[in-house]
Image (cartoon, rainbow, N blue to C red; front, side):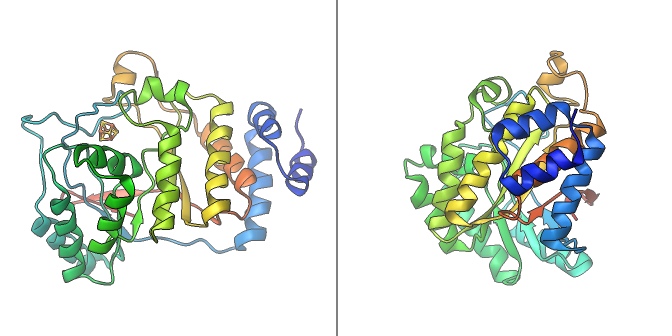
Length: 304
Ligand code: SF4
């Protein structure tokens, strides 16, 4: 049995990993939500902020072919694409004029045919036409992959991206920071330790970042707790994380779903528990916990 006072006391005394795991398992989602809401009100009052951005993927060609992914296409597939820097810059200009977006969110698959000059040209082209638009770009997973293809260090890649106009890493690729889970959901991607290292490295070279968590597949409450604590640890060292973004796994058209490993989306109560426990663990180390909504506008995603 878990009461609101148990949660309030844990917050006052500093919530531990074992507290958090127990709360995830034992607490009713409404009690967790109430405690998290009380804490959020202390941290941010009644204010909610919004980022109005456009999401443009540079390429959906990806050699990793993760079981969690419905986005990638193999090279040569009729739906595979690579967008030119000009196309991307044009998309940003259009989104800025029509919707007043202030940010470009740009990610893609692991496409070994792209060189670093391509990415530099993308960032430069966007800054040329819209210097005030913030570019949140490749995830740590992309940085790691391309660094290996280009035989460069991840630090060097981050520095060159920054010099070309990148402002922040978009925070993806974290999925769940636990190897047991990663072996099933993203077997060919880098490990959790590398994600954490690249986040820190990005902050040290002067880039900011988001931090994500993909939940609602095969993870257990202990994995959620491990993940959020790992992110809090990075933030306490670098203060470079702008927001924490729990992303609900959408199973349709993924291998995890087709092979029956995941039967469907997680229930809404679980979403609330995940967000609430994240707030209780993070406290005010990361003030913004973001939920994303989006709509498709002529082929571009507009996040809000
Ligand atoms: S690396 Fe990213 S784009 Fe590629 S398959 Fe995995 S999740 Fe999809």
